[in-house]
Image (cartoon, rainbow, N blue to C red; front, side):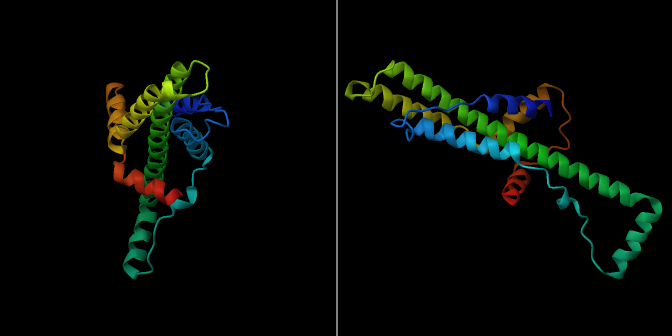
Length: 182
């Protein structure tokens, strides 16, 4: 949770204020997209309605459910499902936030590189090769920000910090959760 809070703080610091001429430049477009994605992740509410225990009207399930209730296991089953759902939601949000932050950081490097080339001037032909190189560097960096890399980075950081990893959902489950939440 602390990592997600830190990511929220960093994401809140992302500012993009391109001039009207620069608004559609590649790096600014990515930065604005990251800002919108971050706001969506940070403002989304947890859907506790997804915690319903699936039931079937079959006689066998009814008998088993009665047994669970009688022994108190139903509460354990629901708590376990609730815990897994909460962990999945938190993990998916952290994954999304980390990926957004990595992309935004790449775009900010592009902005800084572009500003270093232009030094307050309007772009003109002599800036072309350096601006083209900045665009290429941005594209190259963005191509390395894959879902697998983000999950591996988070897993490595958690492992080094001594966090419990056994409950972490796999990438395919997180991606399914993210798609179903949209």
